View 1 (cartoon, one colour):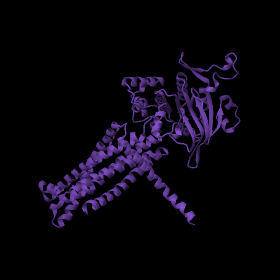
View 2: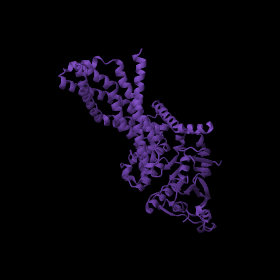
View 3: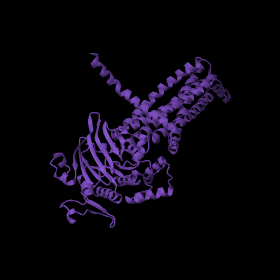
View 4: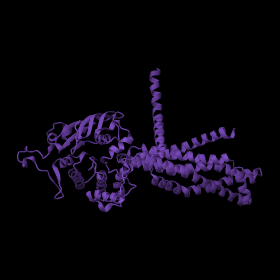
Length: 281
Length: 263
């Protein structure tokens, strides 16, 4: 195992009754890398994420998260490990009995409970504010999730996922059910988070376009905008057509629990597999 | 052909046995968490408010009317034998031993086993339970244990209130039909109540509370299949907890008969 490994699946299998959810899935994610997982509904994408942090346990195979074997740990031991991972759930997964501020504060308070770290109230409030400023929803602090639109809930979900500055963020269908403009906003936030803090990420989606944006666009901290990444053919000596740092974003395609494709965007475009082709538009 | 018959029989038993096993595991963890930190004290008080204060009006209402009805019914029977002065005793026995605890428990099951199941069920289907686990909280500790403690504390209190108001209702009938003086009624209520009647009247709501909270949480936690699933979980929680309330009441009666009255 390489020292900078964040997450590693080794021959993971999981069945729900007779339905295969994961079939012999193996891959590795390293520091600062992004994986875009494409697949139809029910292909095992969400299960993959849930297995990664031990919410669902596989039937066989090993999963290593920050070099600890998730599959061998007890639920109580997993809490510490999960604190280093941010998760955005499909519909945001916000607690609807709590305000936006309480939701975003929740992981921070929780970590303070578990690690007995002395957390200043003022400090907490500032971090919550900062996380909400990041998703440009500072004005919604005291609102309840039910009072927000779908896109706003997703953004609060991102704020909650990143408030603890995790080393790995898992995004479960961040753009599902959103209009194209809001979907772009969400993807831009994901790019911004990745590039500002160099976090590793897994983005599960059925939209190829999401992956395309993540693979080819960068956050420019000077202008504060999302810009196309420099093509390597713009850089002297680069390979024509390639993107700067092309190995950082890779694509996985899932079909009925199997990983049917793993590789770069160029390889994805070049694939002749009819199922894979359906996702490339 | 036993080889063919046996697996079929086992399959038939598999689901209820597995369900019961899951229930026992959940109950064990819920009870175990009572003594393990972190404690979510705020959640306990919130649930006490929802379950206790929230149920108070309906519990008082039902208590009053069951006292009135019992008074009317017993008055006719007692008048036949000229035993009207026994009314306080009859009411005290029936209300405190059985009717009060069971009626209150059924009401709270209808109100709160359903409420708990639907709330936790909605959280389940909208991935809030998973989010909770992902953010490092044990949902059993945060959701189940506070509801268990809160119900176990408030249900005996609600029962005491319902019993008392029921006896007041009975007194109203005794006074209006037979002009019975207050001292006579309350003396007959008090005199014939043995210690074990009162114990029985408090052990029952405590046991029923555990049933209501755990069954509600159990079906909430198992919810699958979106909003439809939440509806199913709610119905199952009310039906199951109501059934178990009667079963538990029978066994508590039986235990008291064997261990207290027959000695």
